[in-house]
Image 1 (tube, rainbow, N blue to C red):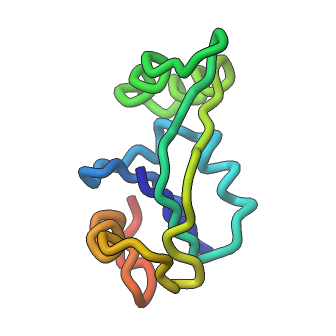
Image 2 (cartoon, rainbow, N blue to C red; image 1 turned 120 degrees about the vertical axis):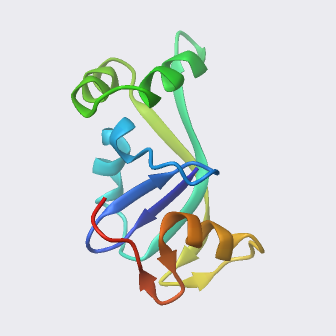
Amino acid sequence: MLLVHDQERTLLRSGHGTDLTAAFPELVAAAAELPNDVVLDGEVIIWADGRLAFEYRTRRLSRRPAAAARLAEQHPAHFVFSVKSYMLKDYGSPRLFELRKQSGHSRYGTVLGAP
C-alpha cells in the first residue's frame, strides 16, 4: 500500500493502484500529522484479539465511508511503513516511479485531480 500525503490531501493506494482512502479514515486523519510531500510504502494492519486480523481489514475494502468509519472505531487500522520519498527525494526504491505514477504523485508534485 502506498500513502501519499501533501498539503492538499492524503491518498491510500493499493499495489494495483486502487484508491483505498475512504476505507481507512483513521489513517487519513493520522497522516495529517505528517510533513507535506511524503510518500510511504507499507501495509495496513489491524490487530485484534492478540493477532493480525486480516478479515477486519478485508471487510473495510467494500464498505461505504460511513460504514468504514464505524468499523474504524471498533478495530482501528495501523500503517506499518518504510519511507520511500520525503520532499520528493527518493529513498532507494527502483519501483518508486511506478508507485508514484499509480498514486498520481510525480517527481514534480501531485498530478491527480480531485478524487
